[in-house]
Length: 246
Length: 246
Image 1 (cartoon, one colour):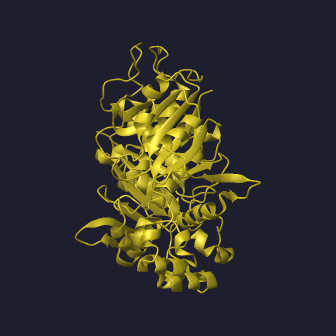
Image 2: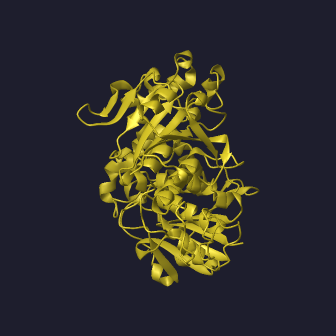
Image 3: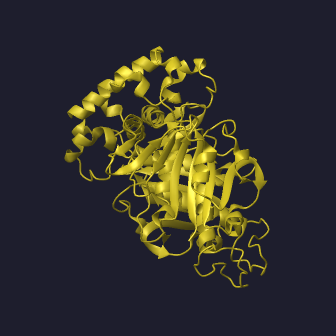
């Protein structure tokens, strides 16, 4: 069985940075939520007036992207079959590990609250039941290498444009790391050259992170079902008998 | 070219119903948001304490499902290629038509605000530029029949379990309606028997609406690329030259 590791890399998830913690929109939002400003997640939609003072302001504060990515992953067939482990890596090299049995809140404000609790407690819901776990100061290459992957695929606009199902079917590996950028604009901040990653592009059109995630999941699920490297019989149906990709 | 019509059916999107409009949690939420209670969307997460008084309380108040469904649809290849029109049908037979060029807010609270505006104005952002349009009192069968579909597929747990790519490849039709249930629990409230729908199931596991949506989009996109009804050549690659499904 091939084990897949999905890493949402350089995702725009962070607490409100200290340099804007006293901005009016932050303070107002903190008061409305009954939270300390520095314990809130930065949110481009709520905190936009303060973003002028932040570098990279056009891409920061997007917990919504992380939320959708995780909702798609944890409900996928791949995860249900025990073949997927999911990790969120952030711009500040924070890493969140998500246990496959986690039931994430589909409601965005609740998800934000959950991640804020995670930043306070390091594990949620509890140490005895660590469904989500936060570790800090872990660079992307250290995270990926920790999985001891036989193959690393990075979804990247400057990668090779190759059909995804074929790509995943052709991989002969027991441990496959898949890197998806967790940002809406720009490029990876992490240095991908430190990883022996095969870069794969989904084409010219700029896709949302959830679209990329959905395509990657579907391609792997299909590659796992019917690897096209096997010679297909010239029949009406293209489905090969269910077998493993390796 | 095949034109696809996606309908999120019986989705749990509605304004706060009059029977709970004076409940404390509703009034508190309305005050915090500076909104009239009856102009807010019902939200299971915010308004749960009042749900005991509502029939079907275990499934109601899920704008998040509609949000995620729409985000996946509008960013899909199918939509980008002009082959997809998307409609939301609700438990109260409200219908929201979404123009393909709509850029929906990925931020959930903003999406809720947008739909609340839609319920006040019937079109948003404006009559001159009706990206979202609301019509009321349209039953599911009337909506689907209005598209004059040659084929209707309904994703349903009690349907035939058949591989989706094969299913969509085998459809010889110019106008295909695809019905996806917009609820987290239970079954369709609308009477599907009024439609000549072929029911298709994705298997035993109860899937989230976004997973179903993602699978249907991927299957159609793949069927459009390489219909398996064409006799495949016994080569290493299973890709047929890009051509239309019909």
